[in-house]
Image (cartoon, rainbow, N blue to C red):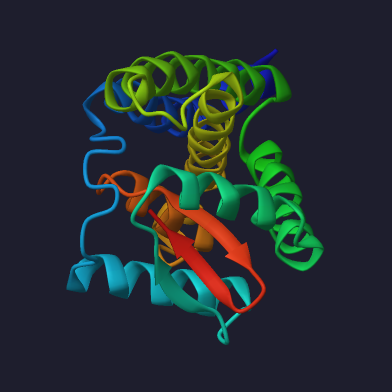
Length: 195
């Protein structure tokens, strides 16, 4: 009993930090700067992202229109190297998180983050894009899916303490781009596409 109680006390700080991230999602300026010129902070974050993900050859490509972004999202989903690299990172962080928190605690927080991110992203995407001629259910699902995936990975970074130990982790940098109003669509070939 004592050991269980001690373990519970040890995991509370990680869970509370992840809960604070979940609470902050409603203030994230999602998609507020899409299509705009990339500023120095955008360029810095995106350059560090591709470097730390292991794709230093990928050049930032600013997307201007929704149709371009949706096409780039489809192309990114078909790039097996980038997808596999991110999946390996996600699996590693999940293991690290479970070394610090119980599976029940981690699962509950990750579900909370994913649910909130989905609701907030869906509302925001509808507000920004519902009148676009290129907007449909497929576009909505793609954009919401990208936000949810990024928020989930950011929560894993917090639960594993990676946000404190390695603040330049690709998942942290990707969420930072979302949190600056951009859509980091993904890597396809030699381009890191940003809307």
